Image 1 (cartoon, rainbow, N blue to C red):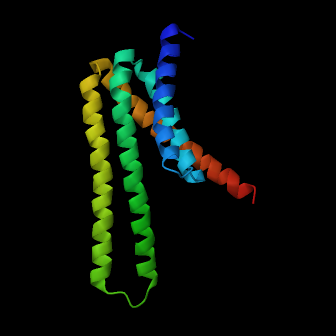
Image 2: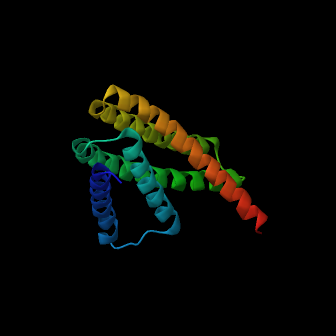
Image 3: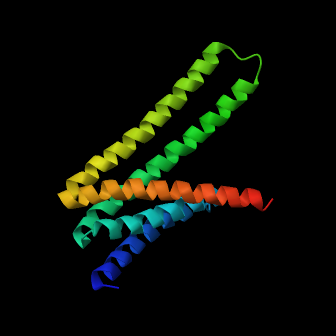
Length: 164
């Protein structure tokens, strides 16, 4: 491993440990799905660092913002999951009024837009920190990483069904 890769790995590890220690300091250990989210974040972060060949200076600027963006998205997605559960409850209730459904749908649409907006905000910030070549590699990395994760999750889901 090149010396710069070791330095990147060290910086990333320290940033992630600091961010995850904040979660534990709040007094609640992560549930299983939260742990999966953290693991995916770490994997994406490491792969992104390698794919973009980030410098130490870039890493020091990008990763705190990436961590903030991920925390905010996690909070918004938890809110979204709660609102979707409420929508399911309303849909299963035969006596629900249209106005209640409309209000719930509006909340969900708003949360989904906030998530997209936060992702866009981070990408705009990221692009101010990257060279042209790194921007191009990021676009390719983002598409490939997301596609790869979806494929792996699909295979895992199928494997889980076969084992039942």
